[in-house]
Length: 255
Image (cartoon, rainbow, N blue to C red; front, side, top):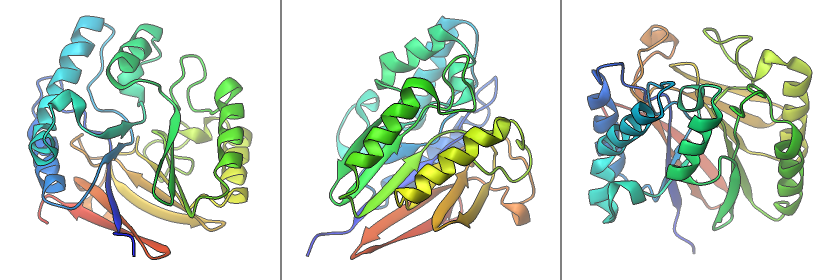
C-alpha cells in the first residue's frame, strides 16, 4: 500500500513595506516543517512588489529567509526548497521584467508535474497584458495537458486569482472576464479536476461547483481582508491524498 501523499498550500505572504509581517510567514513555515508535507504549492503574492528590479530581488531573498525553517526540515538551501509557485499580481505587477525575474528564481510560470497518482498544474494568471485570464498559448497548453492527464487519479490546480472570489476582489479576479472564467471552469469540470487553489483575497474560503472544489487560501502573512468569522485569519492548507480520497485541513498559527 502506497504511503499517503501530503503537501501544503499557501499564498499572499507579502509582508508589508517594512517586512513587518514577515514573521507570520516564518511561523507558518515552521508549522509546515513539523508536518509530513513533501512539498509546498504557492498561490501567489510572495512579496510586496516594486517597479524596481533590484528591490524585487531583495524582496524575494527576504521571502526565502522566511522559508528557512523548511530548508532545515528537508536538508537543502533556502533557494532549493521544494516549492511549486504560481505567480501573483504583486510578484509580476504587469511588468515583463518582473516576470523574467520570477522565472530566474522559479523557472516557468506555468507547468505541470506528477507525484504518484496526482497530477499538479501551476497556472499564470498574471501574464502581462492578459491579467485575470488563461488565454493564448497558455490556454492551448492547458487543454493539451489536461488531455494527457486523464489517467491521473487526482488533478490539482493552483493559480493566483480565484475563479469565484467571495468579496474583496470581485471583478478583479478571474471574473474580470466572465465568459473566459466560465470556459475555464467548464474545462476543469469536464476533465475531472478535483481542486483548484488560489489566493488574491486575504482569507480562507471553500466552495464547490460541478464537483470541483475551489479553495481561496490567502492567509500566508498579508494584512487580512475580513474578520476571522468570515475567513480572515493567517493559515495554510495541509492536503493529504490517501486510498482514493483527499482531505484538506486548515492550519492556523494556533495549531
